[in-house]
Amino acid sequence: MCKHRRKRHTNKQKIDGRYRQNILIQHHAYCRRTQQQQDYSKYQKRLKRICGAALLILDDFLLHTITDEREVKILFEILEKRCEINLSTIICSQREPASWSSMILNDEVSANAILKRATKHYTVVIKPKMTT
Image (cartoon, rainbow, N blue to C red; front, side, top):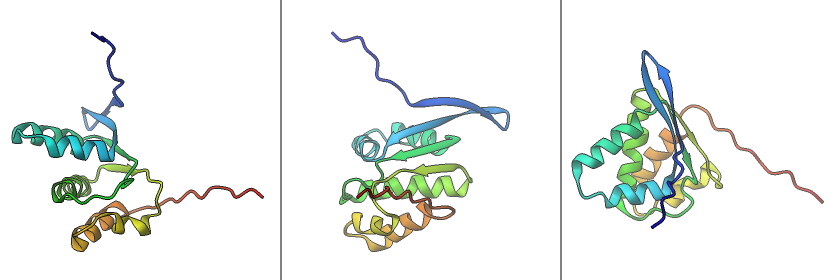
């Protein structure tokens, strides 16, 4: 039996007199795990932890197309709650923000709402150097 532990990408930071975690998650894997969560109380606990983190980094954002309505709802709920309580979220993606809405199929309204919250304040696009 393997006794190795998976590396956790969290650290704690004291803000407003209490400790908050900074969390890095793989976007697609997180949505899939949360969507498969059958126990509503566990889902709420996980959502509260993610939404209350001092800094949330969503890595590989919309790397794959989202077709499941529950995944869209989870993503919207996270971004909405974090915007409401003014907590920082960094989104890393290999795609340009303009192409994100096409990665959320079957629901243009939700795609626009997610895009609006994901790009609300600042957008930094790093373009690779082209060598000849």
